[in-house]
Amino acid sequence: MKLYTASRAPNPRRVRMFLAEKGVQDIPLVEIDLNALEHKREPYRRVSPLAKVPALELDDGRVLTESRAICTWLEGRYPEPILMGRDAEERAFIEMVDRQAEFYLMGAIANVVRHTHPGLAPLEQPQFPEFGQAQRAKVLEAAAWFDHRLQQQPWFAGERFTVADITAFCALEFGRLMKFKPEAEGFAALQDWRDRVAARPSAAV
Image 1: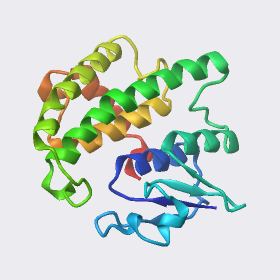
Image 2: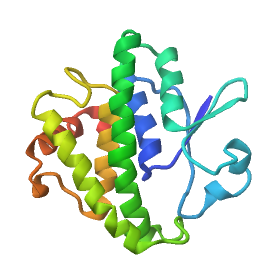
Image 3: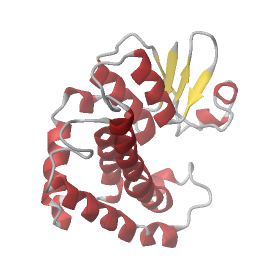
């Protein structure tokens, strides 16, 4: 088994944080150089035909792509600590928030960064700077909504740390490339939450 990853990209980081929270250290990591466009060439195309990271190659040769699918597999393989829910009901509500963090926060941040940051121009062709700038409002809208939730509960999906917190944290860290800081925008609860997650050992991966 091996995990193909890219150290600076948010989605591979989601899986590495998930593994770190599980205490899993025996899956080899294979670094893919995105800046060198290694993900778009053979032999990685044989692993991930869509040229995306991360990808988890299983012992039987099958390959899982998409961060959420990889984490779902890992949750089944390494069930403790529980990060996706104890039963069907809890899993559904955690997945709801995880998807909200992915689609509305991470997605908007990614659109800003991919289309406005000059360092990502080789990876995002063509860039549409006006679209990227327009997405800043979507970032603030999502951040305000999550800040309100965090004024009422300690973690994204409720009373304990879950995969939703991993997704949101990786999104905010990627947001540093657009100079987004929750506290500077008046989102004190979101900033407090971010700092608590940053203090966890898994945040260092």
